[in-house]
Image (cartoon, rainbow, N blue to C red):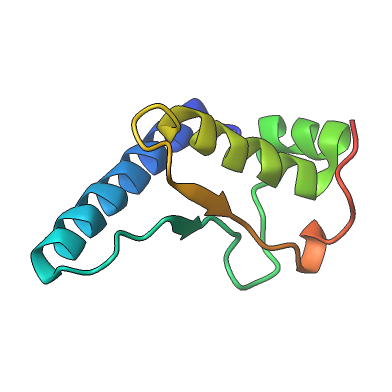
Length: 99
């Protein structure tokens, strides 16, 4: 979650989901979604690259996740001000962030 290329890919994927959902809602005459879930996979694995390890030490696992989610939120805010991102705290993300 600390790799700048991964962040760019995820940001682009999120933008594409939002655009697609807006088009689909307009076509179907339904409400446009406003919540998008950004959470870890449903397992106990996590990145162990040096950059992420450093972030875990500094912020904890939950802090690293929140930094990632905040990056996405800050980068879609101007284009989609009515979109909200949510995340979950479970497994190794349960302890409060530090740093």
